[in-house]
Image (cartoon, rainbow, N blue to C red; front, side, top):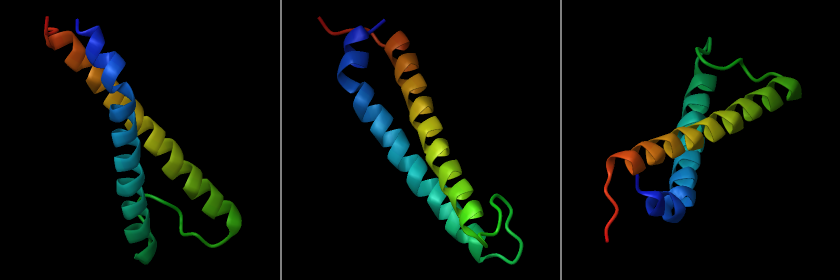
Length: 83
């Protein structure tokens, strides 16, 4: 197990996953709102639905960051530390 990899790279992996999640989920939300009947999100008609949609995007991005941390832990298990 490569503990040094986790210590040095965990913030970078989390930020990369979080920002990627923000962009991807926001893009899907914008495209979805232009459709007549949205697939993934409710049609934003009032402030309550808007806040619900924004919280969904935010928590989805947090989940994407956690997935990238899981990938980092997996990489730390399969790599050998340099001496």
